[in-house]
Image (tube, rainbow, N blue to C red; front, side, top):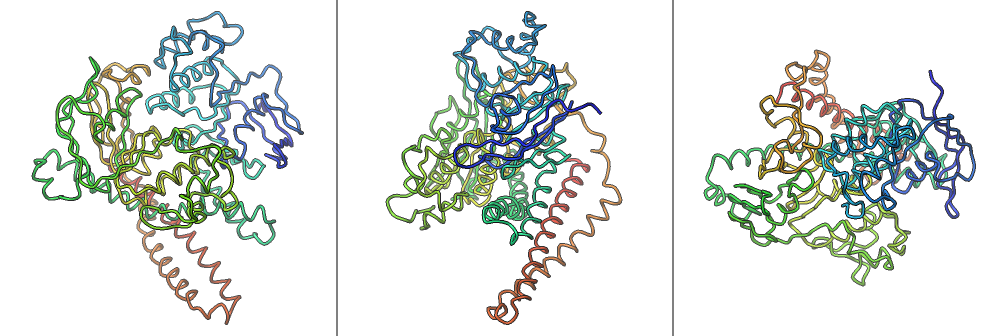
Length: 608
């Protein structure tokens, strides 16, 4: 085994009176595929900069094998010192290849950027793509990628996945994109309360592993100090409870998707007028044969859609395909060139403004949420400010914290809290997942799961779409727009493979309006025609009975614990039953998840 390329030993770093991390030790070897995860504000990006060498630790040792080249993708790359995109990307080439400008042109062609573009005129997405091109041509031994998928469309993210999988060096990735991390990583570093824990498995196994650790800590809570107790309770609420709640929500979402699939089929079979009459009072938006173009660029062509109350519609497509334009047309802000859009009655629309223009740095959290009193009206119901803050993962001690002192994730959560408090039955979210940490993404998913109105969502986060929407509208370019039941993974299974044709380049797939301006078809897998193994079939038969047994036991324990005199008569017995209840609930959640995974595997093998 080759020695590690980089080693951190007992690294400590302090910002202000509190340590950011202490005693951090880790090693990065050749071809390692590492994800660095942790709570928002835990210091992931700072630790990444310590690994890179741009931030010095207060104490500890950093050792890098001589000759090791480390390249770092910052969240906010600075291109100002280079005039053109070609200049910027070529500056990342290895010293021996610094004059080989054609290498910069090759990768820029792949990623769909004109090498002669002036860096000062680039959009946020173009800046990100240029920075990715620069780091990939560096041939570095270690690539450090901090939120690489921010502001990228799905086609570019999938291209980046392919490129990174083929990369010969080591990788360390920070990302809120669960699908991206699950597809690429084989090792997990968890920065938790100032220390790094290592799991020799990828991100797909992280949540189960973290939950096990937190369960163990909760069992020893009496031995922990107050700080760790507080952190454990927060983490338990943010992970364990959320996972339990999400099992029921996933079942409800699948039921909604089946309902939406029937609606989609009916649009093609039944006249819109007849069907609209049957759902009077439930219709939110009805678009008929809508077309829209800007010069030669066709956005929509004879597009029809019916959205009913409670639908959660995802919209995907390459950057520039017209997703925001479609939102404006559906909500009546922009008129189509032809066709009609009818809005339902009594609509109260809310737009989630990710630019944070509703927040003022000088206001406190309390002042931002309050209208002057100590209660806030949340969709028609009065709620105390502190209680509402806790719904969005704020501690009561943060009530009088200035907005300017909050972290990026906390500011996003505050924006969600302020926006979603207003009465609304139509929620419009235009790329809400950009710059959000996983905690806030989980919170937003919960809010949408509990929301009883209608949602229009533009997002490039595949996992988030899978967890939230009932159907997905795909804008494929040249006015071609299709609705599929379910989330992004459902769309991949449902779409039809085109006739055999030459393989499109990544740039072609990312270019809006091109015939190949969509994700390339996946090759059919061998397992799609197979059935579950006998072991899996047997397990699928056993699980419902096990779930029923646990549910009965949980109900019996809850009835016993509900006796107001039980604790006074037998405090020890009360404590034992409480622990048993928690164990049964954890086991039920694990069994439900196992059953769901086997059901999804069975459906995948049986085919759509």
